[in-house]
Structures are given as C-alpha cells and as structure tokens.
Image (cartoon, rainbow, N blue to C red; front, side):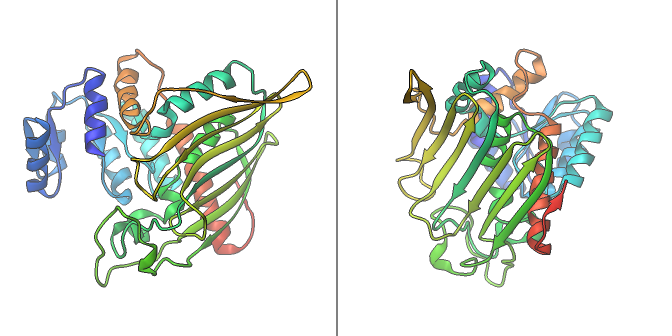
Length: 347
C-alpha cells in the first residue's frame, strides 16, 4: 500500500520526508526506491521531528490503534489503513486522542474514492435514489486465503479473517445508506477451508510453518437499523462460489443501483471490470442506466490518500469520519459476537 499512499499524498501537494519500520533495512530500501530522504528503525524517532505534520499507518491490524494514538499524541495528523482497529473500543480510544490533540484522523476506505462511488453518491445526494431501504454488501472469493500461519490468519494480530479484512463493501453500503444507526445484528462465521492450502490466494504472505490459523474463512450477516433500513453482508476468503465478486447492490424508494467490481481471476486486477448502474421506472417501463466513469485500476487508493491531504488543508471535505469508522467496527464486533453466541446482538 505504501506506493498508493505516496502517490496520493504527492498528487495533493504533500512532501514525503521520512519512513519508519521496525525492519530498518526494509525502510531504507523503500526510502531509496521512492526518493524519501530519511528512514528510521523506530517510530519515536520519526515522530520527534517537529517538521513532520502527518503520518500514514500501514502495519498489521493490531498496531493500528497504538501507533495512531502515539502519533496523535505527538501532534501529527493520522491516515490509517483499514480496518480502523481490531475492535470498536480501540477506535473510541483513537477518537479521544484525535480530539485531545485537535488533529485529523482518517482511514483508507478507498472504495469510497472510486469514480463509480463518486458518481453514485451524486445521484443519491441529488435525490434520484430516494431512501435506500435495503442493501447487500458482498466481497467473496473462491480461493483467496492470504497465506497460512502469518498475521492475516492470526486473530490476535488481525482481529479476524475476511470480515475485518474485506470490510470495504460493508462500509460502502453504509456510506450510500447515510450511515444509519444499527439496532440489531445477526451473524455467522464459517471455518471451512481455512486450513486447506488449495484455497490459498495468488497474493498475500508466505506461509509460516507452525503459525496460527484461527480466523474465519467466511462470514454472513444481517443488520437492522433504527431507521427501518436493513443490510445483508457476505464476505469470504474461501467459499464455494463461481468467482470473486466485489459489490454493493441497493434498493431505494425512487431507484435501485449497483456498484460492482469483477475479477477475471481471484486477486488479480489486470482483467478487472468495474460497473455502475441505476435501475428506475420511467413511463411504465423498467429502465437500466449504465453510468460510465473513467477506469480506476487502483480502486480509489490514490484518490483516497489525496483526500486526506486536501482535508487537512481545508480544500475538500473528508471522505470518511472517525464516527463512521466507529459505527463500522461496532457492526463487525457484533457479527463476531453473534456468531459466538448464536443470538442476535443489540447495538
């Protein structure tokens, strides 16, 4: 992700002055390849520089919250990779640190920055869709486990499996719906295939012999909101489906719609197909409108990072807020709790 962050920040006029990693040699290699003048082996040294205004966090999920809080307390704005943290409680601590420091805290919900999402939000905000009563969020893979025994499959480091890793479409559906307040969540997780190496994806981390694999392979859920709206979700790394699908479909009082990304082969962008459609009734006829937007192979990652800089400078509204990140993590926590208890969870 570092190259997308760098490209996005620079496109918005920011200067990349340093990089830090516990593996200092890796930090130095990245700095050299990206033209970054300084590299550090610890975060504290980087944060001690008063000339650094903002940081981005690209590390395993467990370290999102502590590094964000450390950075905010050092007086830096923070752009954090998804998921926001490994629990809603940690996000609350991040928000408190941001408020205490009077600094910007944003997250890389990059699918909001795709051209299709911008176009669809124009229709939603323009009133053509009406109220979105129901939506379906899906990111499913047939063979997409990102390695075995590494941090992705270790709950203590990742917080969970595909539900927390591939949360983008859940976030995008909530974004389209206006981020309503959830009332109840019912969820189930499945561990089938999580130890079957024939379901490994073509990308990710090398396997770790003797490592931990204690997360789900798939998650399904249903959310009701206090507004009367509903959301269903299906997220998987490994599931008996035809192909990888990434989509949000919704049904509104004036129009329905779909934002979708289809992959030619699991995890490979080269043959990806983006689509954006509206479904309306006109003069007694069903009409399907195809919304044409520029191609975006990076799935909005560069534009998302650029928005962080623009938001700091006050030239754009932020594409996401800490309150939305907290609401998203509360739903994810509730799906996991419902799966453990076998009962709906009140939010």
